[in-house]
Image (cartoon, rainbow, N blue to C red; front, top):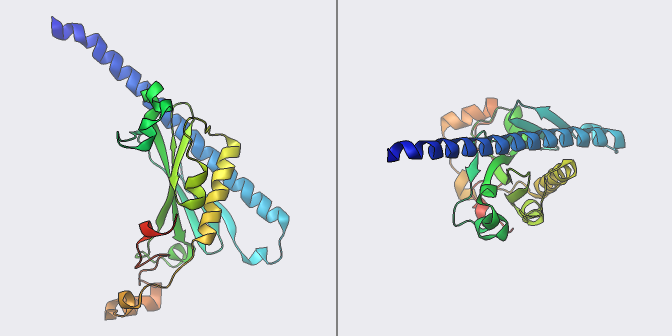
Length: 227
């Protein structure tokens, strides 16, 4: 009898959690759509300005499907990739210690959009050994509040979960911050010892598709870069 009495509570918990996750998922989808619209808006503005030499410098947006978007500018490509699952912050995360989350724990369930920076040549020349870097990730909860973990321009501006609401203007600001960080995140020469040896296979591959690994901080500890 006791087991049967708990069955309604079990189903109630199941339904409430599922509804919560569906809401978070939809808010994350909506956020990605705002980011995509913001990318197109930036492309239109770039073309309208007709800056000297801009025709030689690409600034393009590509919709890579339901969960991805690509923004290419200069020699860089930013890829925004939405995870299809919903996550909760770990108990040790600083967000979990805020009054905003303590008032309503369901606010800690978030969708995630990861922001990756790649060299555009990595895709152009199919350099499959090249590396990209996650420069930020956007968390969106049931109330469309957001929190960003990221490098410098990205992370410093958006760290108030309780007061940060995702909207069209916010998405535009995130894009501009990601672009600014990427522009200032330069390609560094790797340490000599890390590239002084090359196999015949790698050397021959270079002649066709540049298979020697390239990345902005290759051979360096990216996590140790100044914030």
